[in-house]
Image (cartoon, rainbow over all chains, first blue to last red):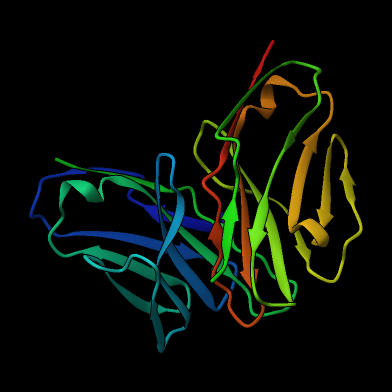
Length: 113
Length: 114
């Protein structure tokens, strides 16, 4: 089984709808991240969490919210989706240590019509 | 503020050619970490390497090698004898000490033709 899973893998929705993207991990990592990828722009950080009680905004948090329900779960919500939120969304996890690296989930492709 | 520049947006080579992907970074920290990730057409992000700022030794892993030069703020990635399976988008990323967030470059798309 994959260490980092994302659901759904693909989603098409309409403008104004509320959408939740979920991320779960079995790596036992404290740190979790949400990124979005747009063609030609690389990955940009939306939100991150260093533990269950810690939530931080990233570079592009406007229009998004997150919830860290447990160490293993980190959800990203779009309260009222708009077309320019169409993108590929990645969740990542990282352990707490000087040699750790971020490991990414398989991604969720979201289309907002 | 940290920044990562991958000036090559797309590179096309023929199988068995060597290819180098460039990465230039900016940071004010003396302690930082550099990464390369691969994104094949299937879309997932695959971790390739992590290097800390105090370790300037070049690294080789099979056909892959990395050249880290602090003097030019570069962390270039070379694929020797490229193969069709190397076709992917490659991202360079930077993390400053004390922060776990990654700053990504915009990626270089590598197309290897048979």
